[in-house]
Length: 210
Ligand SMILES: C[S@@+](CC[C@H](N)C(=O)[O-])C[C@H]1O[C@@H](n2cnc3c(N)ncnc32)[C@H](O)[C@@H]1O
View (cartoon, rainbow, N blue to C red):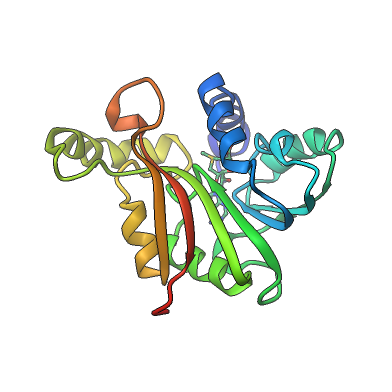
């Protein structure tokens, strides 16, 4: 791992994630969360302050030790128990049917194998469990110019931003992994260029057909 990945990228990811608009999205997304929770790609722990008193435990998985160290310093102030684990979404260190909620915020864009990660999430979710997500991804076909720019930028962007893809179809990834989704937002999540801010927010449950 190079100097950029080890020292600079964790700082950029940490300082690039706390905008007021993001905090509003995080707070709304996490309000219904309760029980035992898995957060995939917990990063520097920006969601931790938004977990409420009905959350028993959050298990936060992320491959980046520098980001997990930052999350640790936020976790000490948390109302609920936080367990931070260095690991990958593609091979979760959890038993089958063991969590009530899976949380992913701006993570599916970055994992190496998004469908593999979602299949793992499906494995660890208890029957009736829910994934809540805010993710950015490819604009719809009705926005061909934005799509074009996203496809053009992604090869460069992912090198700079920790494998972050601007052009993943989040709805299709959930479908391919056996989930049905309810999108509360499918559009620009925040102010800024559409190519960078187009996103998907919602919930996913295991599909009846899966
Ligand atoms: C843009 S950051 C978002 C961090 C955090 N979810 C947030 O909302 O602030 C993407 C995160 O995905 C993590 N990540 C990258 N590849 C991963 C993988 N294969 N499994 C789990 N997390 C991964 C990164 O280390 C990073 O923390």
